[in-house]
Length: 245
Ligand code: B1M
Image (tube, rainbow, N blue to C red; front, top):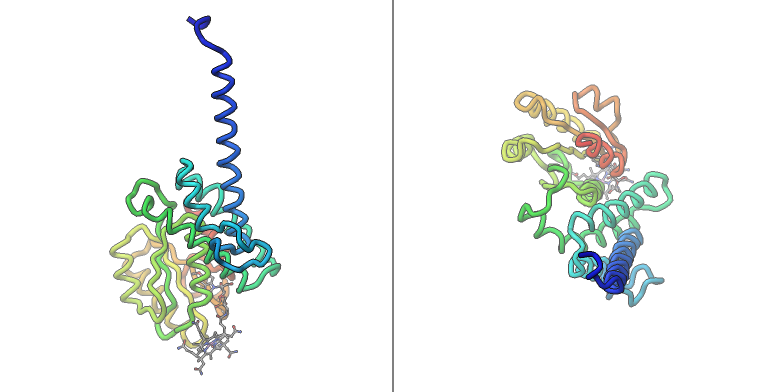
Protein backbone atom coordinates (compact mmCIF):
# COMPACT_ATOMS: atom_id res chain seq x y z
CA UNK A 1 0.00 0.00 0.00
CA UNK A 2 2.97 2.30 0.66
CA UNK A 3 3.27 3.16 -3.05
CA UNK A 4 -0.19 4.85 -2.86
CA UNK A 5 1.11 7.54 -0.52
CA UNK A 6 2.05 10.90 -1.90
CA UNK A 7 5.35 11.56 -0.14
CA UNK A 8 5.20 15.28 -0.81
CA UNK A 9 2.08 15.39 1.45
CA UNK A 10 4.19 13.95 4.27
CA UNK A 11 6.74 16.68 3.68
CA UNK A 12 4.10 19.39 3.94
CA UNK A 13 2.64 17.89 7.11
CA UNK A 14 6.13 17.49 8.60
CA UNK A 15 7.01 21.12 7.81
CA UNK A 16 3.70 22.39 9.25
CA UNK A 17 4.20 20.33 12.42
CA UNK A 18 7.72 21.67 12.79
CA UNK A 19 6.54 25.24 12.31
CA UNK A 20 3.87 24.74 14.97
CA UNK A 21 6.42 23.24 17.38
CA UNK A 22 8.76 26.20 16.89
CA UNK A 23 5.86 28.62 17.39
CA UNK A 24 4.84 26.82 20.62
CA UNK A 25 8.42 26.80 21.91
CA UNK A 26 8.73 30.51 21.17
CA UNK A 27 5.55 31.27 23.15
CA UNK A 28 6.92 29.31 26.13
CA UNK A 29 10.31 31.01 25.85
CA UNK A 30 8.69 34.47 25.72
CA UNK A 31 6.37 33.60 28.62
CA UNK A 32 9.31 32.44 30.69
CA UNK A 33 11.29 35.61 30.03
CA UNK A 34 8.21 37.78 30.85
CA UNK A 35 7.84 36.06 34.23
CA UNK A 36 11.57 36.28 34.94
CA UNK A 37 11.66 39.99 34.16
CA UNK A 38 8.31 40.81 35.80
CA UNK A 39 6.36 41.75 32.65
CA UNK A 40 2.75 41.23 33.76
CA UNK A 41 0.73 42.25 30.72
CA UNK A 42 0.84 44.36 27.56
CA UNK A 43 -0.17 47.55 29.44
CA UNK A 44 2.38 47.13 32.21
CA UNK A 45 5.14 49.76 31.97
CA UNK A 46 7.63 47.51 33.78
CA UNK A 47 10.29 46.66 32.73
CA UNK A 48 10.72 49.75 30.51
CA UNK A 49 12.63 47.76 27.86
CA UNK A 50 9.54 45.59 27.19
CA UNK A 51 6.99 48.41 26.92
CA UNK A 52 4.14 47.62 24.50
CA UNK A 53 5.02 43.92 24.24
CA UNK A 54 2.73 41.07 25.27
CA UNK A 55 3.19 40.08 28.89
CA UNK A 56 2.71 36.89 30.90
CA UNK A 57 -1.07 37.38 30.86
CA UNK A 58 -1.44 37.43 27.06
CA UNK A 59 1.25 34.80 26.43
CA UNK A 60 -0.30 32.27 28.83
CA UNK A 61 -3.62 32.71 27.00
CA UNK A 62 -1.90 32.31 23.62
CA UNK A 63 -0.11 29.19 24.84
CA UNK A 64 -3.41 27.55 25.83
CA UNK A 65 -5.08 28.68 22.58
CA UNK A 66 -2.22 27.06 20.64
CA UNK A 67 -2.85 23.73 22.32
CA UNK A 68 -0.02 23.81 24.85
CA UNK A 69 -1.24 22.00 27.97
CA UNK A 70 -1.34 23.71 31.41
CA UNK A 71 1.22 21.12 32.56
CA UNK A 72 3.65 22.06 29.78
CA UNK A 73 3.17 25.77 30.51
CA UNK A 74 3.91 25.22 34.19
CA UNK A 75 6.83 22.80 33.67
CA UNK A 76 8.51 24.51 30.71
CA UNK A 77 7.86 28.20 31.35
CA UNK A 78 6.61 29.21 34.80
CA UNK A 79 8.56 26.83 37.05
CA UNK A 80 11.97 27.42 35.39
CA UNK A 81 11.35 31.19 35.36
CA UNK A 82 10.44 31.29 39.05
CA UNK A 83 13.36 28.99 39.93
CA UNK A 84 15.73 31.37 38.10
CA UNK A 85 14.21 34.32 39.98
CA UNK A 86 14.48 32.47 43.31
CA UNK A 87 18.11 31.56 42.71
CA UNK A 88 19.03 35.11 41.69
CA UNK A 89 17.32 36.38 44.86
CA UNK A 90 19.21 33.82 47.01
CA UNK A 91 22.48 35.01 45.39
CA UNK A 92 21.44 38.62 46.12
CA UNK A 93 21.57 39.53 42.41
CA UNK A 94 17.99 40.86 42.62
CA UNK A 95 15.96 42.24 45.53
CA UNK A 96 12.41 42.16 46.92
CA UNK A 97 10.85 44.57 44.35
CA UNK A 98 12.06 42.54 41.35
CA UNK A 99 10.93 39.35 42.99
CA UNK A 100 7.49 40.83 43.70
CA UNK A 101 7.18 41.88 40.04
CA UNK A 102 8.13 38.37 38.89
CA UNK A 103 5.58 36.87 41.28
CA UNK A 104 2.93 39.28 39.97
CA UNK A 105 3.69 38.25 36.37
CA UNK A 106 3.54 34.59 37.39
CA UNK A 107 0.12 35.16 39.01
CA UNK A 108 -1.22 36.80 35.85
CA UNK A 109 -0.27 33.67 33.89
CA UNK A 110 -1.55 31.35 36.62
CA UNK A 111 -5.05 32.83 36.47
CA UNK A 112 -5.45 31.19 33.02
CA UNK A 113 -4.19 27.83 34.28
CA UNK A 114 -6.10 27.74 37.58
CA UNK A 115 -9.42 26.50 36.12
CA UNK A 116 -7.61 23.39 34.78
CA UNK A 117 -5.99 22.71 38.16
CA UNK A 118 -9.20 23.38 40.06
CA UNK A 119 -11.20 21.01 37.85
CA UNK A 120 -8.63 18.28 38.55
CA UNK A 121 -7.89 18.01 34.81
CA UNK A 122 -4.26 18.88 35.54
CA UNK A 123 -2.50 17.68 38.70
CA UNK A 124 -0.26 19.71 40.97
CA UNK A 125 2.65 18.43 43.03
CA UNK A 126 0.77 18.68 46.33
CA UNK A 127 -0.79 21.11 48.78
CA UNK A 128 1.05 23.63 50.90
CA UNK A 129 -0.64 25.48 53.76
CA UNK A 130 1.13 28.66 54.85
CA UNK A 131 0.51 31.37 57.43
CA UNK A 132 2.25 33.89 59.66
CA UNK A 133 1.94 32.67 63.24
CA UNK A 134 -0.32 34.08 65.92
CA UNK A 135 0.42 37.66 67.05
CA UNK A 136 2.49 38.43 63.95
CA UNK A 137 1.22 40.72 61.17
CA UNK A 138 4.25 40.63 58.85
CA UNK A 139 3.29 39.10 55.51
CA UNK A 140 5.65 40.37 52.79
CA UNK A 141 8.10 37.47 53.14
CA UNK A 142 5.32 34.95 53.68
CA UNK A 143 3.59 36.12 50.49
CA UNK A 144 6.82 35.78 48.52
CA UNK A 145 7.29 32.25 49.77
CA UNK A 146 3.65 31.43 48.90
CA UNK A 147 3.99 32.83 45.39
CA UNK A 148 7.26 31.02 44.70
CA UNK A 149 5.79 27.75 45.88
CA UNK A 150 2.72 28.25 43.72
CA UNK A 151 5.03 29.04 40.81
CA UNK A 152 6.84 25.80 41.66
CA UNK A 153 3.72 23.80 40.81
CA UNK A 154 2.07 23.45 44.23
CA UNK A 155 -1.44 24.34 45.32
CA UNK A 156 -1.08 26.95 48.06
CA UNK A 157 -3.62 27.56 50.81
CA UNK A 158 -2.69 30.87 52.39
CA UNK A 159 -4.20 31.34 55.85
CA UNK A 160 -2.90 34.92 56.11
CA UNK A 161 -1.38 36.57 59.17
CA UNK A 162 -1.92 36.19 62.93
CA UNK A 163 -2.90 32.55 62.40
CA UNK A 164 -3.69 30.62 65.58
CA UNK A 165 -2.57 27.02 66.13
CA UNK A 166 -6.26 26.02 66.01
CA UNK A 167 -6.66 27.53 62.56
CA UNK A 168 -3.62 25.58 61.31
CA UNK A 169 -5.04 22.40 62.89
CA UNK A 170 -8.40 22.92 61.17
CA UNK A 171 -6.65 23.45 57.82
CA UNK A 172 -4.66 20.21 58.31
CA UNK A 173 -7.79 18.25 59.17
CA UNK A 174 -9.36 19.54 55.91
CA UNK A 175 -6.15 18.78 53.92
CA UNK A 176 -4.40 15.88 55.68
CA UNK A 177 -1.67 15.45 53.02
CA UNK A 178 -0.60 19.08 52.98
CA UNK A 179 2.84 20.33 53.98
CA UNK A 180 2.70 23.18 56.51
CA UNK A 181 4.68 26.43 56.35
CA UNK A 182 5.01 28.79 59.32
CA UNK A 183 6.47 32.27 59.09
CA UNK A 184 7.50 34.53 62.00
CA UNK A 185 9.24 37.90 61.91
CA UNK A 186 9.29 38.81 65.60
CA UNK A 187 11.39 37.24 68.32
CA UNK A 188 8.25 37.43 70.49
CA UNK A 189 6.10 35.45 68.03
CA UNK A 190 8.74 32.74 67.57
CA UNK A 191 7.31 31.35 70.81
CA UNK A 192 3.93 30.99 69.06
CA UNK A 193 5.67 29.19 66.21
CA UNK A 194 6.91 26.68 68.79
CA UNK A 195 3.40 26.30 70.28
CA UNK A 196 1.93 25.74 66.80
CA UNK A 197 4.53 23.07 65.98
CA UNK A 198 3.84 21.33 69.32
CA UNK A 199 0.07 21.31 68.71
CA UNK A 200 0.51 19.93 65.19
CA UNK A 201 2.96 17.24 66.37
CA UNK A 202 0.55 16.05 69.11
CA UNK A 203 -2.21 15.26 66.63
CA UNK A 204 -0.47 14.92 63.23
CA UNK A 205 2.95 13.40 63.87
CA UNK A 206 3.61 12.72 60.16
CA UNK A 207 2.78 16.20 58.88
CA UNK A 208 5.84 17.93 57.43
CA UNK A 209 6.47 21.40 58.86
CA UNK A 210 8.68 23.99 57.19
CA UNK A 211 9.54 27.21 59.04
CA UNK A 212 11.12 30.53 58.10
CA UNK A 213 11.35 34.24 58.79
CA UNK A 214 14.15 36.66 59.63
CA UNK A 215 14.78 35.66 63.30
CA UNK A 216 14.33 31.91 62.70
CA UNK A 217 17.32 29.56 62.37
CA UNK A 218 18.04 25.88 61.70
CA UNK A 219 18.97 25.47 65.38
CA UNK A 220 15.56 26.80 66.37
CA UNK A 221 13.92 24.46 63.86
CA UNK A 222 15.61 21.46 65.49
CA UNK A 223 14.81 22.74 68.97
CA UNK A 224 11.06 23.04 68.34
CA UNK A 225 10.76 19.83 66.31
CA UNK A 226 9.91 21.29 62.90
CA UNK A 227 11.18 19.40 59.85
CA UNK A 228 13.02 22.05 57.89
CA UNK A 229 14.11 25.69 57.98
CA UNK A 230 14.70 27.75 54.87
CA UNK A 231 16.13 31.27 54.93
CA UNK A 232 14.55 32.09 51.55
CA UNK A 233 11.70 31.12 49.18
CA UNK A 234 13.84 29.06 46.79
CA UNK A 235 15.08 26.87 49.64
CA UNK A 236 11.43 26.29 50.58
CA UNK A 237 10.57 25.28 46.99
CA UNK A 238 13.58 22.93 46.84
CA UNK A 239 12.58 21.30 50.13
CA UNK A 240 9.00 20.67 48.95
CA UNK A 241 10.18 19.30 45.62
CA UNK A 242 12.53 16.88 47.42
CA UNK A 243 9.57 15.59 49.43
CA UNK A 244 7.74 14.51 46.27
CA UNK A 245 10.72 13.44 44.14
CO1 B1M B 1 8.01 45.19 61.69
N1 B1M B 1 9.56 44.58 62.67
N2 B1M B 1 7.05 45.47 63.38
N3 B1M B 1 6.60 45.90 60.58
N4 B1M B 1 9.25 45.15 60.26
C1 B1M B 1 10.70 44.10 61.90
C2 B1M B 1 10.60 42.60 61.63
C3 B1M B 1 11.93 44.49 62.83
C4 B1M B 1 13.17 43.62 62.61
C5 B1M B 1 12.22 46.00 62.66
C6 B1M B 1 13.32 46.47 63.59
O1 B1M B 1 13.07 46.71 64.74
N5 B1M B 1 14.53 46.59 63.09
C7 B1M B 1 11.27 44.34 64.25
C8 B1M B 1 11.39 42.96 64.88
C9 B1M B 1 12.38 42.91 66.01
C10 B1M B 1 12.44 41.54 66.55
O2 B1M B 1 11.49 41.03 67.05
N6 B1M B 1 13.60 40.95 66.42
C11 B1M B 1 9.85 44.74 63.97
C12 B1M B 1 8.93 45.20 64.95
C13 B1M B 1 9.48 45.35 66.35
C14 B1M B 1 7.60 45.51 64.66
C15 B1M B 1 6.53 46.02 65.61
C16 B1M B 1 6.52 45.34 67.00
C17 B1M B 1 6.74 47.53 65.72
C18 B1M B 1 5.81 48.23 66.71
O3 B1M B 1 4.64 48.30 66.47
N7 B1M B 1 6.41 48.66 67.79
C19 B1M B 1 5.22 45.76 64.83
C20 B1M B 1 4.65 44.36 65.13
C21 B1M B 1 3.31 44.16 64.49
C22 B1M B 1 2.91 42.70 64.60
O4 B1M B 1 3.31 41.91 63.79
N8 B1M B 1 2.14 42.36 65.63
C23 B1M B 1 5.72 45.81 63.42
C24 B1M B 1 4.92 46.19 62.36
C25 B1M B 1 5.36 46.28 61.05
C26 B1M B 1 4.51 46.83 59.89
C27 B1M B 1 3.04 46.44 60.01
C28 B1M B 1 4.64 48.33 59.94
C29 B1M B 1 5.28 46.27 58.64
C30 B1M B 1 4.74 44.93 58.12
C31 B1M B 1 3.94 45.09 56.86
C32 B1M B 1 3.61 43.76 56.28
O5 B1M B 1 4.31 42.77 56.41
N9 B1M B 1 2.51 43.75 55.58
C33 B1M B 1 6.67 46.00 59.23
C34 B1M B 1 7.83 45.85 58.43
C35 B1M B 1 7.67 46.11 56.94
C36 B1M B 1 9.07 45.47 58.98
C37 B1M B 1 10.43 45.38 58.28
C38 B1M B 1 10.88 46.81 58.02
C39 B1M B 1 10.49 44.63 56.98
C40 B1M B 1 9.95 43.19 57.06
C41 B1M B 1 9.87 42.65 55.67
O6 B1M B 1 8.83 42.63 55.06
N10 B1M B 1 11.04 42.28 55.09
C42 B1M B 1 11.31 44.63 59.37
C43 B1M B 1 12.74 45.15 59.43
C44 B1M B 1 13.60 44.54 58.39
O7 B1M B 1 13.50 43.35 58.12
N11 B1M B 1 14.46 45.33 57.83
C45 B1M B 1 10.48 44.72 60.58
C46 B1M B 1 11.14 41.84 53.67
C47 B1M B 1 10.76 40.36 53.57
C48 B1M B 1 10.87 39.92 52.11
O8 B1M B 1 11.68 39.63 54.32
O9 B1M B 1 9.90 38.89 55.95
O10 B1M B 1 12.37 38.35 56.35
P1 B1M B 1 11.24 38.58 55.42
O11 B1M B 1 11.03 37.24 54.57
C49 B1M B 1 12.12 36.62 53.93
C50 B1M B 1 12.76 35.50 54.74
O12 B1M B 1 12.71 35.72 56.12
C51 B1M B 1 12.07 34.26 54.26
O13 B1M B 1 11.73 34.54 52.91
C52 B1M B 1 11.52 35.93 52.72
C53 B1M B 1 12.17 36.32 51.43
O14 B1M B 1 13.55 36.10 51.49
N12 B1M B 1 10.86 33.80 54.91
C54 B1M B 1 10.53 32.47 54.89
C55 B1M B 1 9.87 34.45 55.53
N13 B1M B 1 8.91 33.62 55.92
C56 B1M B 1 9.28 32.39 55.52
C57 B1M B 1 8.65 31.15 55.65
C58 B1M B 1 9.30 30.04 55.12
C59 B1M B 1 10.54 30.13 54.52
C60 B1M B 1 11.18 31.35 54.39
O15 B1M B 1 8.77 28.81 55.18
C61 B1M B 1 7.47 28.64 55.63
